Amino acid sequence: MDRISNAGPLPTASLRDTLAILCQVLAPNIAKGVIIRRPHVVGVAERLSLDARAVQRMQSLSEKYGRGPLMLKVPMKSMAVVLDPADANDVLEHTPTPFSPNEQAKHSALSHFEPGFSLISEGEAREQRRALNERVLQSDCPHHDASEAFVQVVQEEVTALLERVATRYDELDWPTFLLTWDRIVRRVVLGDAAADDRVLTEELTALRKAANWGFLRPKRQRLRKRFEQRLAYYLREAAPGSLMSALAQQCPGREQAPLQQVPQWLFAFEPAGMATFRALALLSAHPDFAAQALAKAQQGHPLDDFKATLLEALRLWPTTPLLLRQTTQPTQWQAGTMPANTSVLIHAPYFHRDERYLHAAHRFTPELWLTPEGRSHTQTPWPLVPFSGGPGICPGRHVVLLVTSHCLAALLGQARIILHPPDKLSAEAPMPGLLSPFHLRFRVHR
Image (cartoon, rainbow, N blue to C red):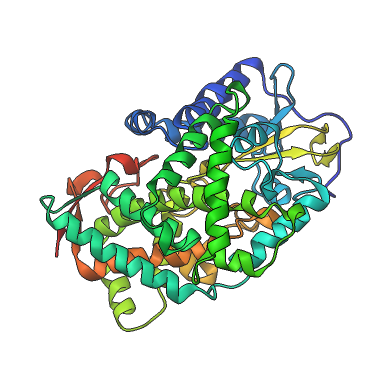
């Protein structure tokens, strides 16, 4: 951090403003579930527009205190919120030092089911585990070596899904979609032999439900051991065309904790499914763009329009709304000094939906992702962070975009899908602050 002008402490929010942040920004997101969503709470948050209110609260704080990081009056805990886009970029770019992703609350949650995952590791262990993730997921390559196998899985499962929907009064809802999505995820990550292994998914779900409570809930050690034994079986079998096969080819050592990396791949795909379902709603609400995207796909063009739709779903309704870092040492800012061991909060919806600076912040704007100038709204590169950013960016982002875009293309290529009721989203109106995937329904006409 080299923008130093004041060696004193950073500004601190009043007790009233601190309580407002805790109640209007942090509490709703915690209540919705930080590791696995609670559908009922998400539905309530949607109806009460809690996410939009959180963005408005953050905007009011930036106008009151200025754009620098703001310390909060939290007892026994040093905590700050980031209000400036340049500061958000700095925090993400300077990961893991001095802004470690191994934030205390995040560690207490993720350690329930992946205590050796790279994100909550430190030092040499983190570097080795992060490198292993990047090699297996081929994070620098938009097209994974197993892309053809992944696309084949998506095509097969979407076709089977639409056949099932045809027997259910041609209605597609979240539970029906999730069954197919889980099969896709298991086949992509573990191999075809795991397609019907719903027990593994249920075990991970149980571990994630416990993780929602962080340090307040005892760890389910026996369940985690059984879960890891199932993962070990799929690693030994290492089905070709799966991420497990790519992992086995790396011949990872014990210090890289290979099995501890796999739960995150399974876990992260569920929010990708939520984003896919929301993207389907966006395409239904914008039929001209959907027709354009499908026509390009059928002519053999890259699926850039579908990827842009998925990225817009993640911008409008981030599946990771709170990005957390923890300072490993005192850091200097333009407005003052932040102490070590401070939890630093980046509220993604605040930056994604700030109409004061972003053109059409509340509209479906795929050109943000389709043209280089799409995000050039300000002098500062704007922190649109659907997959986080900087050295801590999601190493599986290209695999996720590949699977989700082909899922959208396969759905629209085989059926006409209409949001029901159709006025739930409208191209003529701003997009809502939150869209619950659990309460979306579509009419399907093959």
